[in-house]
Image 1 (cartoon, rainbow, N blue to C red):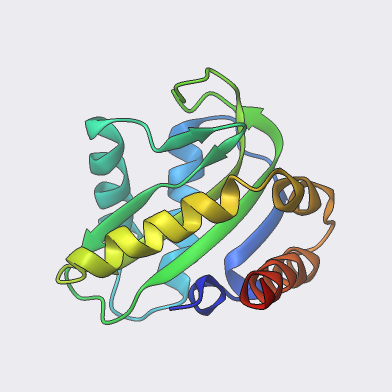
Image 2: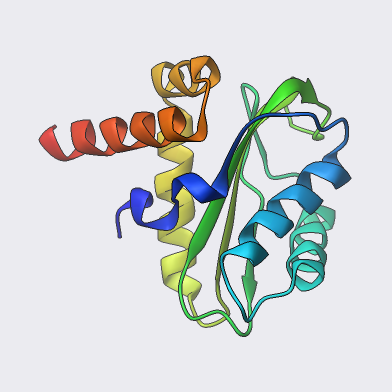
Amino acid sequence: MDIIDLISPDRIKCDADVTSKKRALELLSEMLAASTETLPASALFNKLTGRERLGSTGLGHGVALPHARIEGSDKAVGALIKLEEGIDFDSFDKHPVDLLFALVVPEHFTDEHLKILADLAEMFSNEQLCESLRQANTPEDMYKELLHWQKQLKIA
């Protein structure tokens, strides 16, 4: 699965004014819920926060990948936010997080979940991509950066 299949410009938010980990997860849950009729934001939020209680999904270098498996979903879906200012996300490197990509997959997506997370971790470990996302001014610009990154990956 291409990472780009998980996201669309309507599930990307630029320069979100969020000041806490809880509010970031709420916003991501709302964005994900808006893209489906079967998953309420409250259920998504509970799943994402439940996963965070197991350990932070902060990757370091200002990036976090909150994720969860959930019943009622039939496909993997993602949402991306770029924050105006970084927030404490309990990342191992203690750096504030300003890029968050949330992933929700169907409950039965055990192996697929791990593969998608590995692909996302690789994507967001690319400093050039992260910097391009941070410089983008609109969701469409961020989406184009993701498309460009995916295209370059296929060429390589």
